[in-house]
Image (tube, rainbow, N blue to C red; front, side, top):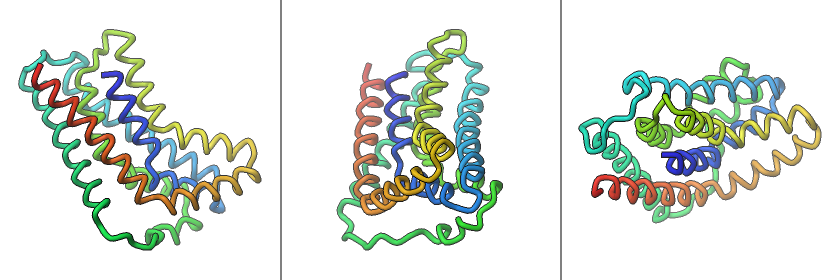
Length: 214
């Protein structure tokens, strides 16, 4: 479970779309306040999904090959297959010039409430769903299970936490460097999405097939 959560958390934190949006928020008039609202909403979404799963399982992992366990593995397999198909679709699609999303023009006027809503909108829900299917195996009675879930949430938010702290401690330097980072990310967004989708998709499929076969 821990390794799966670390792979999924890493893929989430490296996602280009929400990182670009976060940098735009940090550059807006309300800068770090918008960034903080986005970050807290992002974390709250992750925690809420995990909490719902644990309420369903009672914090006790289902027996191996029981219907709930098989359903969770099947969900991860389906998500993995979907990610692979999506990544392959993007890879085969003719290249398109990068265009900023429609909401990007309104970020300068964003308020903390809309920044929090944007975090919910930009959450990579397929990966979050894979994380939820993995958390089904968590055991709340053990420290290892609780630490794994905490580590997953922090890892999935690590890029946002790092940028928020940097913007608070060195706002002028952060503005220039983070905007340079955003320009690079936007220029390589398609390649990043393809790489992450294929890599995580293959991982989830392989792990799911192994779990079903053993």
